[in-house]
Image (cartoon, rainbow, N blue to C red; front, side, top):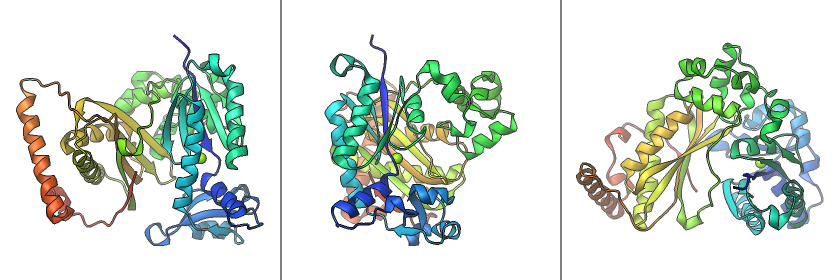
Length: 405
Ligand SMILES: [Mg+2]
Protein backbone atom coordinates (compact mmCIF):
# COMPACT_ATOMS: atom_id res chain seq x y z
CA UNK A 1 0.00 0.00 0.00
CA UNK A 2 1.27 3.43 -0.89
CA UNK A 3 2.30 5.65 2.01
CA UNK A 4 -0.39 8.28 2.61
CA UNK A 5 0.49 11.81 1.54
CA UNK A 6 -1.86 14.58 2.55
CA UNK A 7 -1.55 18.26 1.63
CA UNK A 8 -3.26 20.98 3.57
CA UNK A 9 -3.38 24.13 1.49
CA UNK A 10 -4.30 27.36 3.22
CA UNK A 11 -4.62 30.84 1.70
CA UNK A 12 -2.49 33.42 3.53
CA UNK A 13 -4.67 36.20 5.03
CA UNK A 14 -7.38 35.14 2.60
CA UNK A 15 -9.94 37.91 2.93
CA UNK A 16 -7.32 40.62 2.98
CA UNK A 17 -5.31 39.36 0.04
CA UNK A 18 -8.44 38.64 -2.03
CA UNK A 19 -9.63 42.18 -1.34
CA UNK A 20 -6.20 43.63 -2.17
CA UNK A 21 -6.00 41.73 -5.45
CA UNK A 22 -9.56 42.76 -6.38
CA UNK A 23 -8.81 46.44 -5.77
CA UNK A 24 -5.60 46.37 -7.81
CA UNK A 25 -6.81 44.26 -10.73
CA UNK A 26 -10.58 44.77 -11.02
CA UNK A 27 -10.98 48.31 -9.67
CA UNK A 28 -7.68 49.71 -10.94
CA UNK A 29 -6.66 51.13 -7.56
CA UNK A 30 -2.98 51.69 -6.96
CA UNK A 31 -2.74 51.16 -3.22
CA UNK A 32 -2.03 47.56 -2.20
CA UNK A 33 -3.70 47.25 1.20
CA UNK A 34 -1.38 44.34 2.00
CA UNK A 35 1.45 46.88 2.31
CA UNK A 36 -0.21 49.11 4.95
CA UNK A 37 -1.71 48.41 8.39
CA UNK A 38 -5.11 47.20 7.23
CA UNK A 39 -7.87 44.86 8.30
CA UNK A 40 -11.03 43.36 6.95
CA UNK A 41 -13.65 43.91 9.56
CA UNK A 42 -17.29 44.01 9.66
CA UNK A 43 -20.80 43.32 10.59
CA UNK A 44 -20.95 46.13 13.10
CA UNK A 45 -24.52 45.39 14.18
CA UNK A 46 -24.32 41.69 14.86
CA UNK A 47 -20.79 41.29 16.18
CA UNK A 48 -19.94 44.85 17.18
CA UNK A 49 -17.36 44.82 14.37
CA UNK A 50 -14.57 42.32 14.76
CA UNK A 51 -11.29 41.85 12.91
CA UNK A 52 -11.71 39.08 10.31
CA UNK A 53 -8.28 39.36 8.66
CA UNK A 54 -5.22 41.55 9.06
CA UNK A 55 -2.20 42.65 7.05
CA UNK A 56 1.34 41.93 8.22
CA UNK A 57 1.79 45.53 9.38
CA UNK A 58 -1.47 45.42 11.33
CA UNK A 59 -0.22 42.23 12.93
CA UNK A 60 3.01 43.96 13.87
CA UNK A 61 0.92 46.61 15.70
CA UNK A 62 -0.50 43.77 17.80
CA UNK A 63 -3.88 43.50 16.03
CA UNK A 64 -5.44 40.08 16.57
CA UNK A 65 -8.03 38.28 14.43
CA UNK A 66 -11.33 38.09 16.24
CA UNK A 67 -10.86 41.14 18.47
CA UNK A 68 -13.22 44.15 18.35
CA UNK A 69 -12.30 46.78 15.78
CA UNK A 70 -12.44 49.40 18.54
CA UNK A 71 -9.63 47.60 20.34
CA UNK A 72 -7.60 47.21 17.13
CA UNK A 73 -7.91 50.96 16.53
CA UNK A 74 -6.49 51.67 19.97
CA UNK A 75 -3.38 49.65 19.09
CA UNK A 76 -3.10 51.07 15.61
CA UNK A 77 -4.88 54.44 15.16
CA UNK A 78 -4.09 54.74 11.44
CA UNK A 79 -5.54 51.31 10.67
CA UNK A 80 -7.27 51.03 7.29
CA UNK A 81 -10.57 49.14 7.52
CA UNK A 82 -12.11 47.41 4.50
CA UNK A 83 -15.59 45.97 4.67
CA UNK A 84 -16.04 42.25 4.03
CA UNK A 85 -17.13 41.27 0.53
CA UNK A 86 -18.57 37.78 0.72
CA UNK A 87 -19.45 37.53 -2.96
CA UNK A 88 -15.82 38.14 -3.85
CA UNK A 89 -14.62 35.56 -1.31
CA UNK A 90 -16.91 32.87 -2.70
CA UNK A 91 -15.76 33.56 -6.23
CA UNK A 92 -12.05 33.46 -5.25
CA UNK A 93 -12.60 30.38 -3.14
CA UNK A 94 -14.19 28.59 -6.08
CA UNK A 95 -11.31 29.47 -8.39
CA UNK A 96 -8.86 28.20 -5.76
CA UNK A 97 -10.68 24.86 -5.32
CA UNK A 98 -10.91 24.43 -9.10
CA UNK A 99 -7.17 24.83 -9.46
CA UNK A 100 -6.57 22.22 -6.73
CA UNK A 101 -8.93 19.75 -8.41
CA UNK A 102 -6.81 19.97 -11.52
CA UNK A 103 -3.97 18.24 -9.68
CA UNK A 104 -5.34 16.33 -6.72
CA UNK A 105 -7.40 13.16 -7.08
CA UNK A 106 -9.28 13.91 -3.84
CA UNK A 107 -9.95 17.47 -2.69
CA UNK A 108 -11.85 18.18 0.47
CA UNK A 109 -12.76 21.82 1.00
CA UNK A 110 -12.33 22.44 4.72
CA UNK A 111 -13.30 26.08 4.89
CA UNK A 112 -13.63 28.98 2.49
CA UNK A 113 -9.85 29.32 2.16
CA UNK A 114 -8.40 25.91 2.94
CA UNK A 115 -8.54 22.40 1.59
CA UNK A 116 -7.08 18.96 2.16
CA UNK A 117 -5.75 17.10 -0.87
CA UNK A 118 -5.12 13.38 -0.69
CA UNK A 119 -2.08 12.92 -2.93
CA UNK A 120 -1.46 9.30 -1.98
CA UNK A 121 -0.11 7.26 -4.87
CA UNK A 122 0.46 10.20 -7.21
CA UNK A 123 4.29 10.07 -7.12
CA UNK A 124 4.24 8.10 -10.37
CA UNK A 125 2.42 11.00 -11.99
CA UNK A 126 4.08 13.99 -10.36
CA UNK A 127 7.43 12.75 -9.04
CA UNK A 128 8.61 14.06 -5.70
CA UNK A 129 5.49 15.36 -3.95
CA UNK A 130 7.25 17.97 -1.82
CA UNK A 131 8.60 19.52 -5.02
CA UNK A 132 5.15 19.22 -6.55
CA UNK A 133 3.63 21.11 -3.60
CA UNK A 134 5.91 24.01 -4.53
CA UNK A 135 4.52 23.90 -8.05
CA UNK A 136 0.90 24.05 -6.83
CA UNK A 137 1.75 26.93 -4.49
CA UNK A 138 3.47 28.87 -7.29
CA UNK A 139 0.64 28.15 -9.73
CA UNK A 140 -1.90 29.63 -7.31
CA UNK A 141 0.25 32.76 -6.95
CA UNK A 142 0.85 33.16 -10.70
CA UNK A 143 -2.67 32.35 -11.87
CA UNK A 144 -4.84 33.65 -9.08
CA UNK A 145 -2.68 36.39 -7.57
CA UNK A 146 -2.61 35.29 -3.93
CA UNK A 147 -0.28 33.19 -1.85
CA UNK A 148 -0.85 29.96 0.06
CA UNK A 149 1.00 27.79 2.55
CA UNK A 150 1.15 24.05 1.95
CA UNK A 151 1.54 21.60 4.83
CA UNK A 152 2.50 18.02 3.97
CA UNK A 153 2.22 14.91 6.09
CA UNK A 154 0.64 11.48 6.40
CA UNK A 155 -2.66 12.69 7.87
CA UNK A 156 -4.90 15.72 8.13
CA UNK A 157 -3.92 16.76 11.65
CA UNK A 158 -0.21 16.96 10.87
CA UNK A 159 -0.69 18.47 7.42
CA UNK A 160 -2.87 21.22 8.85
CA UNK A 161 -0.39 21.88 11.63
CA UNK A 162 2.43 22.14 9.09
CA UNK A 163 0.62 24.66 6.90
CA UNK A 164 0.39 26.93 9.94
CA UNK A 165 4.17 27.10 10.37
CA UNK A 166 5.98 30.19 9.09
CA UNK A 167 3.97 32.20 6.52
CA UNK A 168 3.48 33.32 3.79
CA UNK A 169 4.07 31.50 0.49
CA UNK A 170 5.86 28.48 1.99
CA UNK A 171 5.78 24.68 1.92
CA UNK A 172 6.39 22.77 5.16
CA UNK A 173 6.52 19.07 5.96
CA UNK A 174 5.64 17.44 9.26
CA UNK A 175 6.26 13.73 8.82
CA UNK A 176 6.11 11.38 11.83
CA UNK A 177 9.91 11.30 12.10
CA UNK A 178 9.87 15.11 12.42
CA UNK A 179 7.55 15.20 15.44
CA UNK A 180 10.30 15.56 18.09
CA UNK A 181 11.84 18.56 16.30
CA UNK A 182 8.86 20.36 14.81
CA UNK A 183 5.74 19.33 16.75
CA UNK A 184 6.55 18.46 20.33
CA UNK A 185 8.27 21.76 21.25
CA UNK A 186 5.09 23.74 20.39
CA UNK A 187 2.93 25.11 23.21
CA UNK A 188 0.10 22.70 24.00
CA UNK A 189 -2.45 25.37 23.05
CA UNK A 190 -1.21 25.12 19.44
CA UNK A 191 -2.56 21.57 19.14
CA UNK A 192 -5.45 21.70 16.71
CA UNK A 193 -8.13 20.38 19.01
CA UNK A 194 -7.11 22.23 22.15
CA UNK A 195 -9.22 25.27 22.97
CA UNK A 196 -8.63 27.91 25.62
CA UNK A 197 -10.04 26.09 28.58
CA UNK A 198 -8.43 22.72 27.79
CA UNK A 199 -5.07 24.49 27.36
CA UNK A 200 -5.47 26.10 30.78
CA UNK A 201 -6.40 22.82 32.43
CA UNK A 202 -3.45 21.08 30.78
CA UNK A 203 -1.05 23.79 31.94
CA UNK A 204 -2.42 23.43 35.46
CA UNK A 205 -1.32 19.78 35.27
CA UNK A 206 2.16 20.90 34.25
CA UNK A 207 1.62 19.96 30.59
CA UNK A 208 3.05 22.90 28.67
CA UNK A 209 4.08 21.57 25.30
CA UNK A 210 2.56 19.13 22.82
CA UNK A 211 5.50 16.86 23.67
CA UNK A 212 4.55 16.95 27.37
CA UNK A 213 1.05 15.88 26.37
CA UNK A 214 2.35 13.12 24.09
CA UNK A 215 4.40 11.69 26.93
CA UNK A 216 1.75 11.96 29.64
CA UNK A 217 0.24 8.67 30.76
CA UNK A 218 -3.03 8.12 28.93
CA UNK A 219 -4.78 7.03 32.14
CA UNK A 220 -3.98 10.35 33.79
CA UNK A 221 -5.46 12.23 30.86
CA UNK A 222 -8.59 10.08 30.92
CA UNK A 223 -9.03 10.72 34.62
CA UNK A 224 -9.08 14.47 33.97
CA UNK A 225 -10.63 14.72 30.52
CA UNK A 226 -12.62 11.48 30.10
CA UNK A 227 -12.94 10.44 26.45
CA UNK A 228 -11.38 13.65 25.21
CA UNK A 229 -8.20 12.57 27.06
CA UNK A 230 -7.63 9.64 24.67
CA UNK A 231 -8.25 11.87 21.71
CA UNK A 232 -5.78 14.51 22.98
CA UNK A 233 -3.11 11.90 23.67
CA UNK A 234 -3.43 10.47 20.17
CA UNK A 235 -3.36 13.93 18.57
CA UNK A 236 -0.20 14.89 20.49
CA UNK A 237 1.40 11.71 19.13
CA UNK A 238 0.45 12.74 15.60
CA UNK A 239 -2.29 10.15 15.25
CA UNK A 240 -5.37 11.14 13.27
CA UNK A 241 -7.57 8.54 11.66
CA UNK A 242 -10.00 10.85 9.85
CA UNK A 243 -9.71 10.42 6.10
CA UNK A 244 -9.75 13.07 3.42
CA UNK A 245 -13.04 12.67 1.63
CA UNK A 246 -14.15 14.06 -1.68
CA UNK A 247 -16.03 17.24 -1.27
CA UNK A 248 -19.62 16.58 -2.17
CA UNK A 249 -20.84 18.96 -4.87
CA UNK A 250 -22.90 21.91 -3.65
CA UNK A 251 -26.23 20.17 -4.12
CA UNK A 252 -24.86 16.98 -2.66
CA UNK A 253 -24.06 18.29 0.77
CA UNK A 254 -26.35 19.79 3.32
CA UNK A 255 -25.11 22.08 6.03
CA UNK A 256 -26.07 24.97 8.19
CA UNK A 257 -24.16 27.04 10.68
CA UNK A 258 -25.03 29.90 12.92
CA UNK A 259 -22.90 32.73 14.25
CA UNK A 260 -24.16 33.43 17.72
CA UNK A 261 -24.88 36.99 18.83
CA UNK A 262 -23.76 36.10 22.34
CA UNK A 263 -21.13 33.48 23.09
CA UNK A 264 -22.66 30.23 24.27
CA UNK A 265 -21.14 28.78 27.40
CA UNK A 266 -23.52 26.06 28.49
CA UNK A 267 -24.20 22.65 27.00
CA UNK A 268 -28.00 22.83 27.17
CA UNK A 269 -28.05 26.03 25.14
CA UNK A 270 -25.63 24.54 22.61
CA UNK A 271 -27.84 21.45 22.31
CA UNK A 272 -30.88 23.55 21.46
CA UNK A 273 -28.96 25.38 18.76
CA UNK A 274 -27.63 22.10 17.39
CA UNK A 275 -31.15 20.71 17.25
CA UNK A 276 -32.38 23.80 15.41
CA UNK A 277 -29.55 23.40 12.89
CA UNK A 278 -30.32 19.69 12.46
CA UNK A 279 -33.99 20.50 11.86
CA UNK A 280 -33.08 22.86 9.02
CA UNK A 281 -30.52 20.52 7.50
CA UNK A 282 -32.87 17.53 7.84
CA UNK A 283 -35.73 19.37 6.15
CA UNK A 284 -33.54 20.19 3.15
CA UNK A 285 -32.35 16.60 2.83
CA UNK A 286 -35.91 15.27 2.98
CA UNK A 287 -37.11 17.87 0.50
CA UNK A 288 -34.64 16.36 -2.00
CA UNK A 289 -35.73 12.86 -0.99
CA UNK A 290 -32.11 12.17 -0.14
CA UNK A 291 -30.34 10.34 2.68
CA UNK A 292 -27.00 11.05 4.28
CA UNK A 293 -24.64 8.86 6.23
CA UNK A 294 -21.98 11.33 7.43
CA UNK A 295 -22.54 14.06 10.00
CA UNK A 296 -20.00 16.69 10.94
CA UNK A 297 -20.04 19.33 13.67
CA UNK A 298 -17.97 22.52 13.69
CA UNK A 299 -17.29 24.74 16.67
CA UNK A 300 -15.59 28.11 16.43
CA UNK A 301 -14.50 29.65 19.70
CA UNK A 302 -13.97 33.30 20.52
CA UNK A 303 -10.48 33.46 19.01
CA UNK A 304 -12.08 32.09 15.83
CA UNK A 305 -10.20 28.81 16.12
CA UNK A 306 -12.34 26.33 14.29
CA UNK A 307 -12.61 22.64 15.11
CA UNK A 308 -14.63 19.95 13.35
CA UNK A 309 -15.36 16.35 13.98
CA UNK A 310 -17.19 13.96 11.73
CA UNK A 311 -18.83 10.60 12.20
CA UNK A 312 -20.69 7.94 10.26
CA UNK A 313 -24.28 6.89 10.81
CA UNK A 314 -24.92 3.16 10.99
CA UNK A 315 -27.09 3.48 7.87
CA UNK A 316 -28.22 6.28 5.53
CA UNK A 317 -30.91 8.38 7.18
CA UNK A 318 -32.70 11.70 6.88
CA UNK A 319 -34.61 12.16 10.11
CA UNK A 320 -33.85 15.13 12.33
CA UNK A 321 -33.63 12.82 15.34
CA UNK A 322 -30.86 10.63 13.86
CA UNK A 323 -28.88 13.59 12.58
CA UNK A 324 -29.21 15.34 15.92
CA UNK A 325 -28.23 12.30 17.94
CA UNK A 326 -25.02 11.94 15.91
CA UNK A 327 -24.35 15.69 16.02
CA UNK A 328 -24.86 15.84 19.78
CA UNK A 329 -22.40 13.00 20.36
CA UNK A 330 -19.78 14.63 18.11
CA UNK A 331 -20.36 17.96 19.83
CA UNK A 332 -19.49 16.56 23.24
CA UNK A 333 -16.41 14.81 21.88
CA UNK A 334 -15.27 18.13 20.48
CA UNK A 335 -16.33 20.75 23.00
CA UNK A 336 -13.90 21.66 25.76
CA UNK A 337 -16.16 24.12 27.57
CA UNK A 338 -14.75 27.26 25.88
CA UNK A 339 -17.30 29.94 24.93
CA UNK A 340 -18.72 29.16 21.49
CA UNK A 341 -19.09 31.79 18.82
CA UNK A 342 -20.23 29.63 15.90
CA UNK A 343 -21.86 26.23 15.66
CA UNK A 344 -22.27 24.31 12.45
CA UNK A 345 -23.73 20.99 11.35
CA UNK A 346 -23.04 19.54 7.95
CA UNK A 347 -23.78 16.21 6.40
CA UNK A 348 -22.44 14.24 3.49
CA UNK A 349 -22.14 10.88 1.77
CA UNK A 350 -25.48 11.55 0.15
CA UNK A 351 -27.49 8.79 -1.45
CA UNK A 352 -30.96 8.81 -2.88
CA UNK A 353 -31.99 5.43 -1.65
CA UNK A 354 -31.97 4.29 1.91
CA UNK A 355 -30.57 0.81 2.22
CA UNK A 356 -31.68 0.60 5.84
CA UNK A 357 -30.20 -2.22 7.79
CA UNK A 358 -33.53 -2.95 9.36
CA UNK A 359 -33.46 -4.89 12.51
CA UNK A 360 -36.49 -6.26 14.25
CA UNK A 361 -36.58 -3.73 17.02
CA UNK A 362 -35.68 -0.68 15.03
CA UNK A 363 -38.13 -0.89 12.15
CA UNK A 364 -41.25 0.35 13.90
CA UNK A 365 -39.45 3.24 15.55
CA UNK A 366 -37.76 4.33 12.34
CA UNK A 367 -40.98 4.30 10.35
CA UNK A 368 -42.69 6.34 13.03
CA UNK A 369 -39.86 8.89 12.95
CA UNK A 370 -39.96 9.11 9.14
CA UNK A 371 -43.69 9.73 9.17
CA UNK A 372 -43.39 12.31 11.90
CA UNK A 373 -40.65 14.14 10.00
CA UNK A 374 -42.68 14.10 6.79
CA UNK A 375 -45.70 15.51 8.61
CA UNK A 376 -43.67 18.30 10.19
CA UNK A 377 -42.15 19.21 6.82
CA UNK A 378 -45.56 19.35 5.20
CA UNK A 379 -47.00 21.65 7.85
CA UNK A 380 -43.99 23.92 7.64
CA UNK A 381 -44.13 24.08 3.84
CA UNK A 382 -47.76 25.15 4.05
CA UNK A 383 -47.70 27.45 7.03
CA UNK A 384 -44.09 28.55 7.47
CA UNK A 385 -41.19 27.35 9.60
CA UNK A 386 -42.52 28.84 12.81
CA UNK A 387 -45.85 27.01 12.53
CA UNK A 388 -44.45 24.06 14.44
CA UNK A 389 -41.82 24.48 17.07
CA UNK A 390 -40.26 21.95 19.33
CA UNK A 391 -41.13 22.64 22.95
CA UNK A 392 -37.52 23.41 23.78
CA UNK A 393 -37.45 26.34 21.31
CA UNK A 394 -40.50 28.08 22.69
CA UNK A 395 -38.53 29.99 25.30
CA UNK A 396 -35.73 30.77 22.88
CA UNK A 397 -35.93 34.24 21.39
CA UNK A 398 -32.28 34.71 20.57
CA UNK A 399 -31.80 36.31 17.20
CA UNK A 400 -29.37 34.31 15.18
CA UNK A 401 -27.66 34.98 11.94
CA UNK A 402 -27.83 31.98 9.67
CA UNK A 403 -25.23 31.06 7.10
CA UNK A 404 -26.29 28.30 4.78
CA UNK A 405 -23.28 26.33 3.62
MG1 LIG B 1 -6.07 30.98 5.71
